[in-house]
Image 1: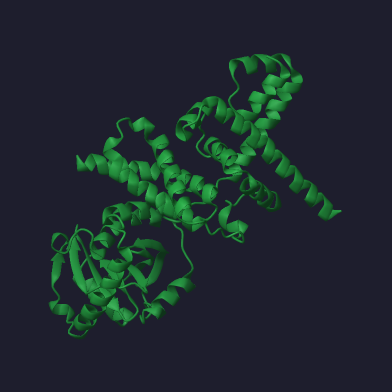
Image 2 (image 1 turned 180 degrees about the vertical axis):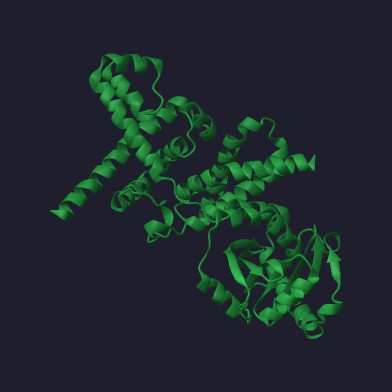
Amino acid sequence: MFATKQSKFESMVRAYSTELYRYAYWLCRDRHTAEDVVQETFARAWKACDELRDDKAARSWLYTILRNEHARLFRRKPLDIDHDQALDEIVDDSARDPAQELEFRDAMNALPPSYREPLLLQWIGGYSCKEIAEIMGLTEGAVMTRLTRGRIALGRLDGTAARRRKGRSA
Amino acid sequence: MTCFEFRRLLLAQPRELTALQQEHAAGCTSCAKAAEAAVGLDMQRAQSLLVPPPEALADRILLRQKMGPRTHYGMWAIAATLVVGVALGIQHYRSYDTAHENVNTATAVGMNHPAVAAISFVLDHEPQLLKENRSGDPNVMRAAFQRLGLKLPGDGVSMRYLGKCPVPGGTGDHVVLQTPYGHVTLILVPDYPVGSRVMVADRNMTALASPVEKGGYIVIAQSRQVIREIERMLGS
């Protein structure tokens, strides 16, 4: 029994810790806090592992735990966000334009959490509107509205940044 | 479906067009183009969120789970461990004789003992870390050796891996050495009390957890004799 629980837990950690970390990072915007949130998420998951009846639901279940854990932490203390964290430390290395990446990051940070969160679940978790609604405890319609408004707001924020960039280079 | 409805839905879920949307896009070039652009932008944005996770995150989570949860009185426990650990450490350190050192079983010291956890870490996670072939900053390792008052291993010893690993209450420097006696792992924990000097044999490996003036270290090797040789090299 223990071996089954242990191996199930290990598989969950190996499969989902990276994406949960990314989700946590964009929720709290701090690497160390994100890791703490993920650690706590799995600590709670381990304790409650026996309650998980359907293994297919494990991923959404972990996202829900992480959301609660993040909310609990946020209630307990205001997050001390390191705005000067170097871009190369947080964004994966690739051929993308670092200035644009930085502006996108700023735009994401400027989004209200109610818009940011469903977008993160869609982009990082790859969830559908229905699944996001289940994780967030909302109706599907409310999720669709938030996603739509979030994308519009992000487009505006990105556009402002692009105009600023143009102005600087002129 | 109108173009307005199509685009409203597109903003909510660009990568999953409904049957009605697909039907509309088939007959509307402008909306089809908008959908294509929206998918491209969405994928680019999703890609931008892929921040690199911390090194060995999964290993740290699993190790913490094996070591047990943190308690609310964690700081008091650490403080108590510090006091007891330093006192016992000094006492044991003075009267130490490796040749006659007692080798404990994992059951005797408990599965949560740092030396037992270190053996688990080496056997369960180190092979994967070695495969990834990543290495940390040698200056960080040098500084850790210096802080602990240890000598850097000399001739005939090369470093195979350098990274971070979880230890109770924080992270340690994880060093894998190729030595004339085989593959040896060192876990350096500056500023954290290892407690008393304890040697443990478990799962065909031996680990020695030893306190030094400012922190401690754990050596994991295949035998007590190899640990003795490594300690000689470290000048501890």
